[in-house]
Length: 286
Image (cartoon, rainbow, N blue to C red; front, side, top):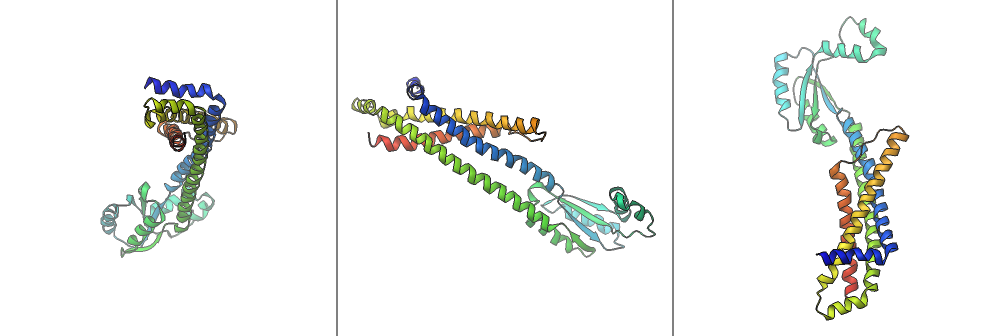
């Protein structure tokens, strides 16, 4: 193993410019992916905060007995998608309106009769706050005989789902494109390294070295380049995060340890894959 590692490190001394080019290419490829990842991460968390406001409100017919509502709340809370279900009386609804609708406070105080109906407010579990699940819960609420109307803002929930899908698709396409570029660059540098050592490899074969023994240093070299590129990409992403947060006074959240490790691991996989393809192709020619 020490021989393999020594040979892999010697490759950096034999072709420092090509090695630096490989590492830089991986770094900037993963950096672009990281930037999109940061945007997607912060967008996802912003969407999560918005989705916390997703709720289904069932307005009740006047005179609905509280006992009926109490039994219904237990049934609604047993729905697999439902996190909480709470009853809001007519008086509570009016008090909330006076508190939140400041511009209409005077008009609301002058009311002789409370025009607001009682309601049941239903919040869904985080994984079920999409248009399909929300609409399903709304349809089941309409089946209760004492429910007069159900509102849940279906249009903006669909828009929220669409934004999530677009963000995920863009991140996937951009990540795949830059990963492919990195694989091609690494493959080219490894191929040149194999060609430079063509005579040495031929001699190694003459003395009985297997293809796997010859291939391993190049694979380790690719993994090292990928690891270095991944670490550099994380550092560049953090620098961009600091610039946006401190200089532009715009709060953003950075990757967690596991997400940063995934970027480095992605660089190592790209390096290994590029080396594997290139070495296999060139060894058949040497």
